[in-house]
Length: 223
Picture 1 (cartoon, rainbow, N blue to C red):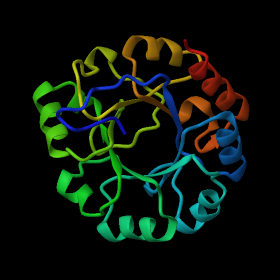
Picture 2: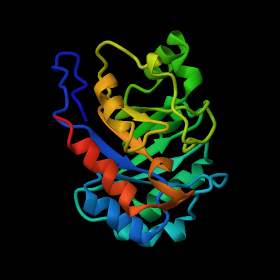
Picture 3: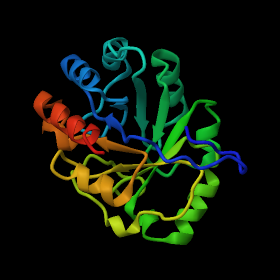
C-alpha cells in the first residue's frame, strides 16, 4: 500500500503490479503464479460465469504460493456470505464490486479494494464522494462496468476519465486489457496495477497459459 499519512510522500511504483482475476482451475492458478502475477482473484458472485462456491475455491486458495496475494471478489453480498468467505478462505484482500458503502466494507476489519464503475468515473463529484466514503480502502479498481454490475466484460472505459492529481490510495486499471493493449495503457495512465480476466481467457473462467504468460511479460518488460 502506498503511504496514506497526509505528511508522507506519494511514491511512484517502480513497476506495475498484475492481478489475474476470475480463476477457476488449479492449472490456471499455477500458471499465473509461475508467470509472476502479484495477485490472483476469485469471484464469489453467483451471477458471474466465473463464480465459485467457497468449497470449490478452497483447493485453489490452498495452491497459491507464498508472496502472491489472494483476492475475493464480492458484489453487494449478504454480510453472512462475506464472513463465510473470510472465515473459510482467509483471503488477503476483499474486492467489493457493487454499491457497497464504506461503513459496510469496514465492518469486516479486513483489507479491501473498492471497484469504481464507468458511471462513477464520469462524474467528478460522485467520484470524490465515493473515494471520501472509503478512506481506508487499500486502492480503487477502475473498470468499465456500471456500479452494481459485473466486470469481466472485455470492454474498456474512456481513459480520459482516469483521475488526475495526487491521491493517497493507488488506482488499479481493469477493463478490456490484453497483451496487445496493456503497454499502451500503462504508458498513458501509469496505474499502480493492472487487472486482467477476459483478456487472458479461452472462454469465461478458462484461462490460456500462453495469454497469461504473454500479458505478464508485456507488463514486466516496460522500462
